[in-house]
Length: 147
Image (cartoon, rainbow, N blue to C red; front, side, top):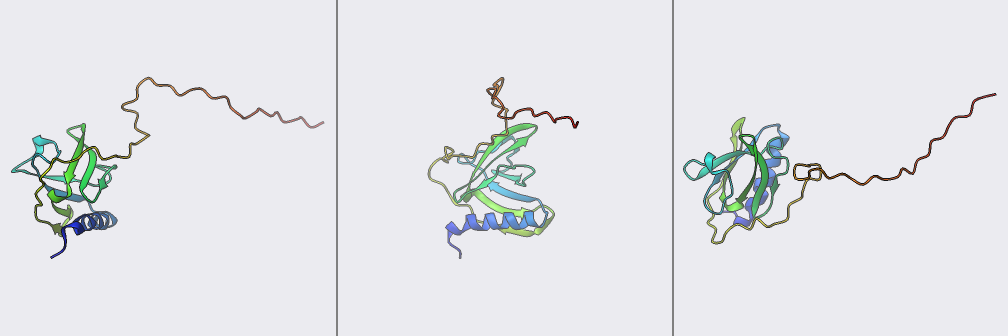
């Protein structure tokens, strides 16, 4: 049996393999109080999520957590999943490409305060802020007429 600290490496490598094959990676997740997912989509304490780069371009698969933002019914929601709650990762197009894992219980709440890379291109939180005008260092040079 593999050590439990090997799981994040398997999830990351399988995620890359699935995307390299141009398939859509999905994860099946056990949900409880330590998992932050949209509760309206949870069935029998589990949820299956599309984690493709198209669905969640800011995905981070860390050693202890899977963290990303995604749209659910048109609303952007933050998703935080303890690595121990990832039950499976598979390709939607070929379910033979599947890794399954046992549930690992957590004794403390999930620490969502881990630093995330903020996208500087997103301006959704920035409204009516103008960048200061900068003087150009370029000069207009006119071409001399030939005589």
